Amino acid sequence: MDSRGFSAGVKAGSSIAIGYFPIALTFGLLAKTTGLSLIEATAMSIFVFAGAAQYISLSLIAAGVAPILIVLNTFVVNIRHFLMTAALNEKMQPDARWKKALYAFGITDESFSVLATQQGGRLKTSFAAGVILISYSSWVVFTAVGHLIGANLPQFLQASMSIALYAMFVGLLVPSMRRNRKVVSLAAIAGLTHAFFYFTEWLSTGWAILVATLASAVFVELISPKERKS
Image 1 (cartoon, helix red, strand yellow):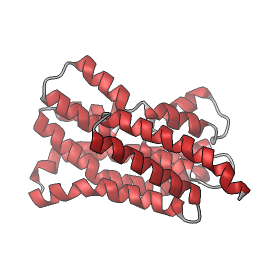
Image 2 (spheres, rainbow, N blue to C red; image 1 turned 180 degrees about the vertical axis):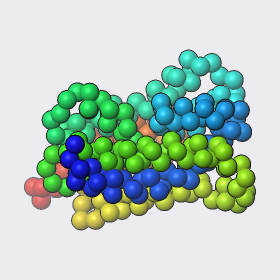
Image 3 (cartoon, rainbow, N blue to C red; image 1 turned 60 degrees about the vertical axis):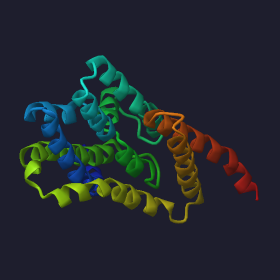
């Protein structure tokens, strides 16, 4: 593996790892209060690695929902990953399928944002591995740490962690919006579309995110040729 590309990926993914710290810590804390053991909570982060789906699963577990429904809910919430990994595949260098399967497992909203907005030619597998490994390690490790010590944190600090996820998205999105009107349009249309479904409650969160993603991507692609002609 290209060590230089891997190091660059670790550096690029360090902001994700820092952003995951409070979220994973909080998840570990909530998993403990839900009744999951340390092994169960950590295993969920190891094998699922999907923050929103894991948080939803905790509430479903607490409500006594059947396991098959939790699995289906997780699938619906994460169905957008099919689109994300398919789009990212066009940007990555050709490589063995098992390698693609490994880093496809590690794709999240945050790692996709970092990888998809990289400039230049095809992305190296080593770079993607660095981004994903540092973010995945942070999520798994701090889930376990949160389960062990999160319950001892002051209440005000636990409450303040909820805004860290939004701060992380802003930190990832703003640099890519500079001098790129298409990214600005994409973010604005996706935000407005999701807000519409959120306030009207016509769709669940998972479907609202999927529809907002598709609608914004299609609309931006439709108007982009007109911008180039003007």
